[in-house]
Image 1: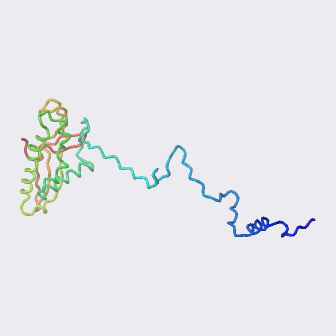
Image 2 (image 1 turned 60 degrees about the horizontal axis):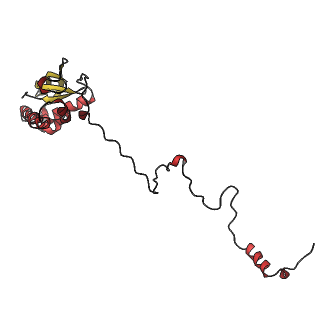
Image 3 (image 1 turned 180 degrees about the vertical axis):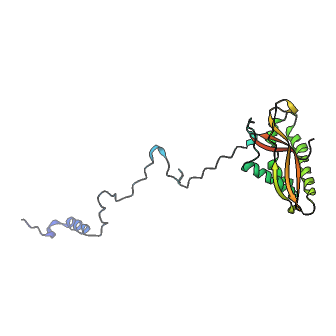
Length: 219
């Protein structure tokens, strides 16, 4: 084999040889790129979960607001005087009487959005507020006074709703749509070892639920 002395190959050869012997990055393993590849979009243009197109975290979706049943159409469902919703409203009424706080009993009062659909008068909202709610508040104050000096000693027993409910047809009592109505409900309680009861004059229905519309008097 012909041997060539390195000095005879010129300076370019020497420089190339020196550079090849210098520090270099180790070769990447087979199949792994030596530089980062750009992120590829997900199929269909989908974003990475938890991120937004601007690079920041995606905002959490706000839950849709629940529909108020009082704004929905009336049904012909016959209400029952039991169940979690009824028991909670009944407890609110008793709590309001014991604590002399009518606001606590408002969940059991016929809702204004339903009354606007029912009543065929010039201003059903004003009638609801200034006649019906005003009487409801007065009655709760009066029932609280009947509990005497120690109202917290009174113990709730039951709210007895008669089973015979009457469907009031549209056109009766200045109504545009119908509802079930029941008279003669009794709120029973004990105080000092004695049994007592309050009359609840009138309950009417909305979408299969009972609500108070007249507590101690109808007017």
